[in-house]
Image (cartoon, rainbow, N blue to C red; front, side, top):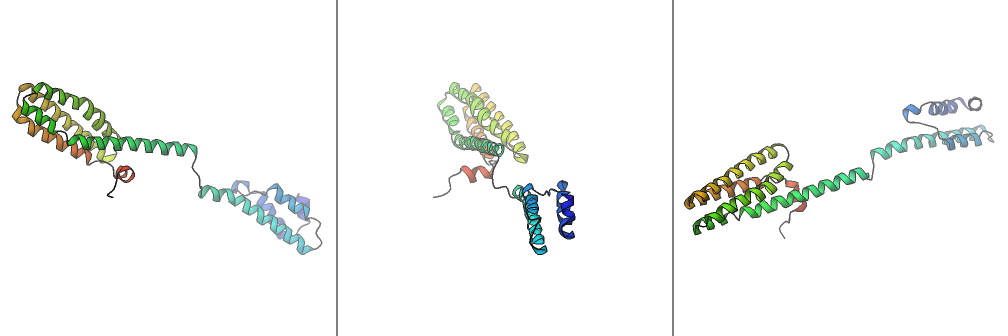
Length: 212
């Protein structure tokens, strides 16, 4: 190869030698390129030899730059990236459902008042404990764990307030203090709505139904 370079014009020889000697820079002379040079090693004129070598050098440079360009402008998604995206979508959809359920439950706190007015304190106590085990723990507390940053801390604080509200209602039920239940249920409703206000905007943007 080097004896062949010695018979070529000096600037072409230098170009190909530099290309062949710089693999660390990501530039390599491909076998086809060298084959092209060898095929033109017996040209009809000096001008044809120069032209053939120049074309081979250009082909080598283009071939070397293509992978780097493809890497920067990757137009596809790897399987790992796809799986992570789908997992995030499923997680967000579940979180959206939890916030929607809490929004609905906030409007149902009036049930506490109805039971207190009817004097059915055993049902009132049962309802407060049911809220604590399901709505608070399975919806609100679970959703709070999925929040991020400042919203996460606020959600955890509200979760504690809701727990206190429910324990307070249960205590009122056991004491038969029906007159104090409306205020307690109003506090519970407000705290649930405060938590619903922490819903990430991306959930509404993705899953919410806009005005028709």
